[in-house]
Length: 266
Length: 266
Image (cartoon, rainbow over all chains, first blue to last red; front, side):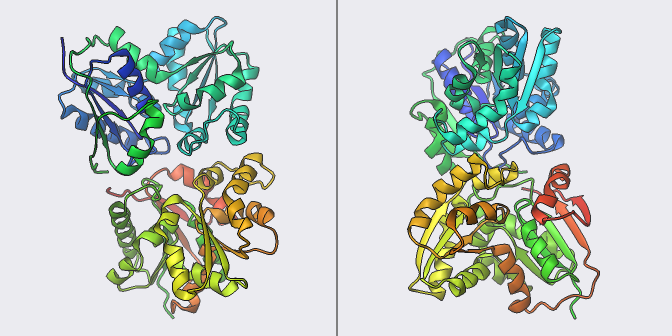
């Protein structure tokens, strides 16, 4: 039984959707979360900058004697893995591989859609991973740059005309292509899952990368369930008040645990 | 004749709307622009962080032997002035004072609206400045957090349902209050001036802080028109490609000048 904590990081608060899945799947685990709110968003940074941020984020989490890291940031996973995994002596689990495995396993017609931030889509990381697993898959991608600000501004109601218009605009080509599986390639997107599902219809399976990463951690990451009491520590690099205000939206419930500030050098 | 350059900075590309006004009003001037794209947005940072960024931005511009700084960032102006002005031996001109002067001079019924990022509105900087100038002014404010991402994603057509819905939602209380003057308290907002004007109608005067800062620089800032050939140097702290792609949108015309990367320590 390995009772060391699990580390989770994201560029901001979105990774809390992954934390909520770990809490549900592995209720006994200790979790240390780091949201790099002083340097958010990663999606518009250069590759060198993102690599440096990722190393600093992992190094910070490692000070808590963690047994594994979930990189709950689509941009960071796309840009820094697999390279960064080789630099550390604990498993570094991104969201791309688990979500790609889930998508290739879920699809029946081989047509898979991928949505994400511009940086994630541009990196083609999901495409590479899926084509390795399933060389004949037909892939359709769309960058959805406004979804993150819409979620962060609370526009999550499927009936909201602003959200609905953007969902329709971003997803129409993917819907028309006849995909039966869609990877929601950004940790913010599960918050608008209902709007996405309403537009695409029941026949399309939605893949939540945070959930798949949490499953992967237990199934393939070799992580045994800890016997702790499920304690949670949250760190942000800026705007602790904003975290306190918005965390419950991403966690899907009340924020339980301490919230501290950890300044980062850029 | 003081032929030293004018320095202009913003957290991102928005300050280019101020640069375009300086180019128009003072065509002979040399301008050095710094867009802190590695650390954008400032609006969600803490006050201490913003103060540090502003000092670093000004210190960088000062390496070009500038004669004045226009702080084209509403958030930075609101949070750091007047304090920061006392720390330097050249004029540091924000957008708050010039825009407030213009608004109090333009209003006929004394009812002034102010829109901006959440940080700008929360700082109440425009309110303080206007009430000093015109103690009986009636002020109506609205934070418009989605305007910046909408502009950055090119949703600037007044007929766009997404933009129009947000304009209507943010500005209805201000319109209903009967303001006759509105300060567009963020350098991104002049890009959607047509949509704002279409909703508020002709009777409302829109104040563009970048334009007012440029006017202030000549009228009250004691800056003589340089005799240079109007050369322009642009620096960004990250994503030079994004700058090259989007600068013309903010400049209202073709990008003329060199664009270089300047990394900043955080």
